[in-house]
Length: 285
Image 1: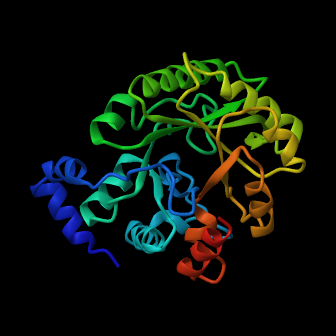
Image 2: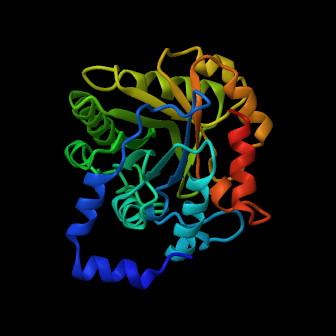
């Protein structure tokens, strides 16, 4: 288990150590791992107040436990990336576990889970300049399109600007799009082939160039039709409930799909065995 006291001492007495750790981090030579795919562990949920994993509504609330699970996952062969907000990535930098990893900074975390303003997903974490300055390999943004919520257009514009700004720095822009609706006061993503096809085509057209854009998409029925809507590389996400490994494997057979971005499904597996869950996912690659 990481020593929280040491991390706090570094933040109190040596805050400059974070920038120094980023500067000396050994960069990966490619976005792809030895398996020719990208295998990313996602941990940007807490910054949206989304702490649930499985049946536990506060599973991700213990930071030392989360960091321990992340360190285990990142140590497994074949895992070559991580996605997180500044607080989490900086803890991992101080722990020295990000050498040779593809690091993706999460950008818009302002659409807090369960709030009236959830669709107005402000960019409250990384921006393109800070991602490039830290030497990270990419920036990720969430794009939920609610046809009934006028706030959607502000998020669309912000994501388009972020795609352009990342591309100008030759840094990956990872866009996670959904068609979403408010049901009984809560945002629900429409996980149908038709809805995901619409979301993917909108996301692919964001920004002044798509040269550095990757998509982050869930597995839905008729995934072949969804992925036929674009030539952009895509990564499969795990979501709130664990998708079956068979679904991930089937999606990975599609030419557009270039890897996995899985978070809670692997960090908090039902049996608690993080290493085993991660290794099983890597074997699909």
